[in-house]
Image (cartoon, rainbow, N blue to C red; front, side, top):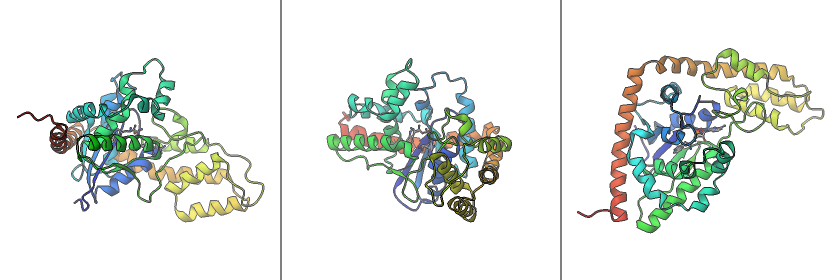
Length: 334
Ligand code: TYM
């Protein structure tokens, strides 16, 4: 049962395989929040159309990502777990919020500039207004807590801007949404090659997916970049070594991390041993999620039930917000 009256909302794009970044940036918080708040968690299939217009793999991705949510510990009876495209009110709010967004600020969004670089042949208007659709997802439930990783910080700032502009123009309807992580700091799970973050579609060999086989996890960790070890006691760690320690902190026992920290500081560290340990701890962490997800993924009847139930809960909350929004804007003629 929810204990707090703040509303929680978040989403993940079904554009590929979920990875450790999605888990530690988002899903881990979802699972804890489901017992404390009213939660709306969504698969952002409409957002995925901005970069993946070919929908051949969409259904399979939706099924797998949904199964992975449940396998990570999300209970579809405690939360609304739904697909974005099943809640049509999202599109109506998106339209109103588009009137609150300035083209100049949308063009400056970091994710937009990245996408323009990656897909110069498909710079569509949906890509430009991506943060507006994300704001619509959040504000549709008048949510104020949004569990996300560090990469979503700017989108959350924009959601706040659009909410405040709406409230300023038409009266208080929306609370300010804020990015949330238990413990404060938003998470960025680094990739295994020390270059950037784990990602659904880039960096595949340096990303650990929740669906990776034991062997593939071991291989990826084994190939992670290391060097001959520190020459001076208590040396600063290069990025690619710091990454390994950060990953170890996520899945290994505290004493294990401390042992390798001591070895590092005393210049006795053997990276082969460290990677072996990290590989095994990763396997122990990921394998149960993978196995559970695999069993759920093929149960299409159960997945359909989850989606229907989730959409119904989400629509109820969405309808109530849309009524307030129309009333506030003055779209009430009878
Ligand atoms: P997406 O699908 O890229 O990522 C889903 C969630 O995983 C987090 N994440 C990470 N966290 C830490 N380290 C990483 N390496 C890492 N990679 C991904 C993301 O921060 C996110 O929390 N625009 C969103 C989807 C969305 C949404 C929303 C989110 C649509 N509507 C409404 C919140 C609220 C996205 O592309 O996430």
